[in-house]
Image (cartoon, rainbow, N blue to C red; front, top):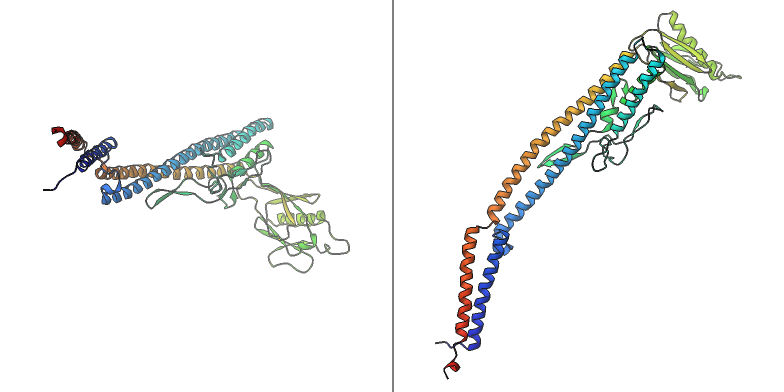
Length: 421
């Protein structure tokens, strides 16, 4: 029979108590956290599963954050474009009202003032920022103000980027969080295929109404630059090509504009060349080849369409040296103005339709992500959560074991031969 020293006996008793205390403390921690796995050593395989599940849930939660961001941004864009639509519809009403013959020039100027105000409001809406301070319609350049210009100058420009930002909203699924300003407001075309933008269209309409322009097309340009470079250069008006010639001959089919004295001892002046061009243009009237009348004042040529109607005047500068400078934009008939407004409205409505479709996708993806997160959370819970009833029962048993160990230690501590002397 092995002999146990008093010191060893006491140490064994203490170790037994510490072991039971450790078990009680661990079970108590499990119950308080509601978790079965406190450290990886508790269940190595389960810990690896939990790590994978946590990463998957974290990724889905980031998708949800992206989803919420996109919903907020697209929702703001929708409400912004709704306001733009209302303003365009109001300008269209004002146009129909303003060009009525019963209005005096003063009445038209008053109506035009509201148009200018509506134009400035649309420009401000186009420069809307989201909650993060990013411009809605600047493409990738979210910190750059996308649109510049005022109704006072009539000059408008897009300084943003023409790209779309895409964000991930689910596994292998991304979605554009907006449209570039160029797509929404700038890259439009009239029915003749000519480029236009919403701002210039509205400015031209308000300007025509304010100045009481007749519903005919007109434009002005000047001849300037290095006049000796004009030989062989062309411009086209209503399909007729006019060619400047110093006597060396013109391309068959083109109309001669004589500048034979342009390089002589006394070169032609800009005004004289403009007069020769005007003469060539007006000569076509007698041939029935054009419906444009040209007048010249101090080298400034003014073209005026003889007839009302779309396409009555078209102008193309075929020169390469920059000798022809457009000084006045075309003034178009009322119904062409209305057609351009309708084009702008159609573009805005098309973009709003795209936004609506994206919002529907986001709603659907939101539900899908939430379902995935719930499923992963349930799987994770099944691995790491503790059976509370079992844990409490075990805890009570361990308390009893601890108390027994403590009482046994006290009893054993009193067992000594010295107590019998």
